[in-house]
Image (cartoon, rainbow, N blue to C red; front, side, top):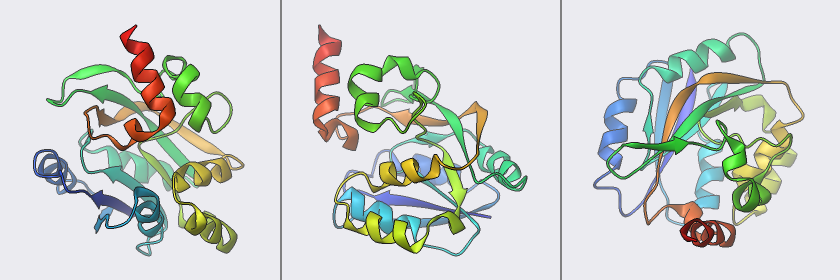
Length: 197
């Protein structure tokens, strides 16, 4: 089983029910919906430490998943790999596909995005990333709890020391809209401005 957490936000009325409907049909997951009262970093750490299953993953409230993807992920994790990730696509507010996501085509984002969150080997593993709970050591827990922003990026740098499996199928649809958290980062604002030129 996979412990999957999702952080709730205030603007969840439109997108969140769509994701919940999909997750309700997924096999192999325990879903934990957590209220994001603090910042997203603190909420993410809380999410990573919630549950007791061997495998840990997460989704965002405003995105969509490929039906049945968590069964595929669980099967891959059962082979013994420390962690795995799927490909993703960027979608608009209505769910229409815009372009490949970071893991599918990292060169799309190298200048502004990957320069900020690159975790090595010219690759960014975003969604759906799933890892073994045992990999979150007491040292990693402590450091993540000290980070105000992007503790998941720190965790990914730690995961890079282990073998991983790239599941070469689209498992995640990352919705682009004005309230996306990543748009708050300076590099992302730069990327958006550059894209307009």
